[in-house]
Length: 634
Image (cartoon, rainbow, N blue to C red; front, side):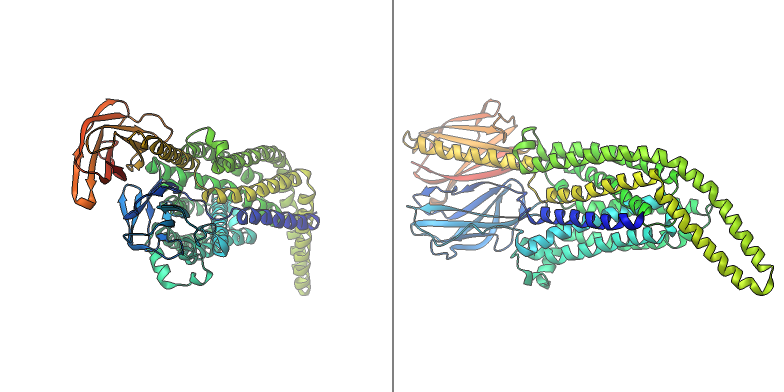
């Protein structure tokens, strides 16, 4: 029976791995987890006067390098000067040379978002009038190419190694302690450790090129590696390697001293290994939580421990499932029905934890029901939910086979001692004949081998055991695909971020249209996205000046959430500066009219010019930020 099933298993696993590879390769470059929500000058706009600087606003904090922001003239020549700098909040700028001639300019950016993913893009604006440009922006992506593919593969293998290492060790320690002496089980757990360690080293080497040039030749650049070690993602990978050293010690004890202890002596050691193993496993899971989605956005302090529990639940369930599959297909020692039942109970608890933490993560990353179908993250999440539901359905079938398997194993275990007594009797009778003792011992060993083979054939022919094998194999097959989808999800822009970016861009576009429409009437409208960094700190502030001329003006300030609803905040301040004439800042404190609406009358503009309008928004006692934009007044 085993000879006919094993080739099918290998073929199925190869097909599933190929499908997962296809998922990873077609995922494309890592999606931006920090989205560009605004810029000054805006995309596609034609300005009369060349700006002194270009600023870009993102949906979250980003990390900059010297070449993160570039401004190119129509011939492709760089016209920026100095290093990029933080303007305020999530807005970043770069100075440009003064007196830029008329034409179309290209702004390119490549930054690293707070959740460790590279973000790149480009847009154009024009001074005076649009012109032809030799700069191509179609290829401006981050995390793509060979390095991007290798990085995605490394992420997949790191998740797989973690699941096999943690889940396999938990299965041996908590469900089948006899498995500590089974060679295939030892190879499985050690293989998980080697896979996770190798993948972590690969990610560490690729990280600098992945977030920068994308060139394969930069993988072994020691300067880049040094820069990576100073980042949050680099620190997480180094921490993972240190924890893997502790995991190696745990494995050596589990499959060494622990296996050689008597059952009574194992109790204290089991408790110690359980505590130590849980600490190491939680630390490994935290190395993902501290550097990725859970570490940024709303409720990060809650999201990170929830993410750790989620990863541990996945590893316990799917890793234990892999260990059970190995025990059923590769182990000569029969696995007890009690061990299978214990794993069934552990798997049920893991599924409960997985669902509970998954619901919270879905709410946090999506934010609305429409994001399920309106964003790529939501669509992938629906696929993941479907796969988890399928896994639970197959697991229910496995539980039925487990119940039927119990009686069969009890009968087999009762027959085993009797066969052992027969073999012992044959060995004893052989020894009584003196010179034929060696021959008798050889016959006893042959008889024992034949009995073991006969028992294995009996177990393999058992329809209940065969049914459990098939259902567990089906679970493992679905789990391989589920892991691939999860890996792609971690590289996809969260639905909440994508929708906020869409809303901000829509508001910016509306602002641009309203500014053009109001130009004839003498009014100016400015829209600026902000993020105070605290919980519920994102929004859009709109400032209206009417009639936008020298002398007295009416000023209205509107504060809205990304979804367009009025935002009730405690304080708004405005400051006007005419940098060309060194006038200002002129502080203005508008009066609150209603929720999200502030106003000030008779705002005096002493001179016509390109005025910088800076708005300070405070959303709580400690969370505030200042955003700014220039406007031609007078």
